[in-house]
Length: 237
Image (cartoon, rainbow, N blue to C red):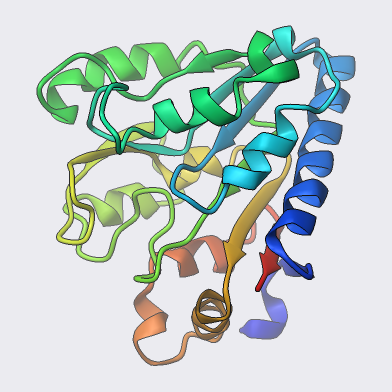
């Protein structure tokens, strides 16, 4: 199986070098899409790992007014909350050159993701699919997006044939309730990136690629083993 995985790894000396390279590649894809179809669409991940990447990408020169940016998943908290991924994106990515981009949030003003699901799905229907780039991260438990081990809707979210774009997700390791794009929707992209940093995550990813022991059941393995879109891993110590 490992030899058949459509995964390439790009290794960098540090997180800053990675951020520069990834930002340049994503900007290149957005420029190409704007030239070809008049618009660009990018989905990014939250958390601490992409901070330098966001800062570098925000300074890339392109027609940001023609770009939509959304998140691959979101904690069900308002932007005023310290754990809001939307707040992170707005503070670090929607700055400088990229301040002209349109941000499309996954959170809606409702008490639960289930209650806000119809509004979010209607909003997501306006996206100019396919994505030009999807940038995923990975947790120490092998989750990516909100595909958490033990997630209450994990099989549905990972179904490669599921036509539904977004789903709520609740899991023991997720903290807050979440909302996430489904795997089938995230694979509707011109380019798929997995951004990880640190030796521990490098080893975890290696185990997931090989399907070793507990890593055989890590949700990220569904991304690595799918054959629809090549996966470009960007890693630094």
